[in-house]
Image 1 (cartoon, rainbow, N blue to C red):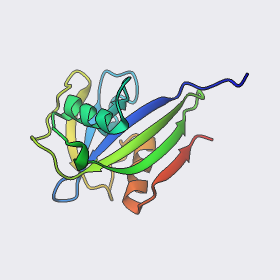
Image 2: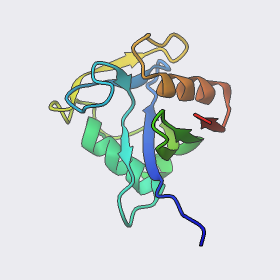
Image 3: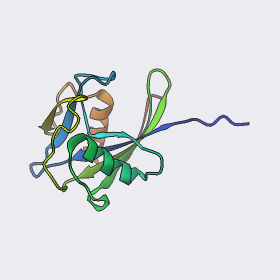
Length: 146
């Protein structure tokens, strides 16, 4: 019998404002990359499509309301960390939404930052920085950690 893997599916959103800046979140109290910058996102939940999950995560983390039509799939990444755990990430972009982004999870986020994606701070999680650069260049698929 073939062993099947249980891969985590991530759904993430790059919110882009009118000035072309993207929204990053400073992680806090999560146990992973605290103090580093990431993007709104999380794990897909049972019964959700990846688009529905991305809409939910954006609402939960930064308080914005997205319609599924507001999202464009910009990149898919298959990632393996140093411990060998794998995940597949769906990265969406959005340039319109309802509401003003806020820190909706202050217990897990130390602040929000609008940054130029062409000049990312050094504190961006390396995997996320790579994805942002790939999205900027139009690269739609990547494999990390193999």
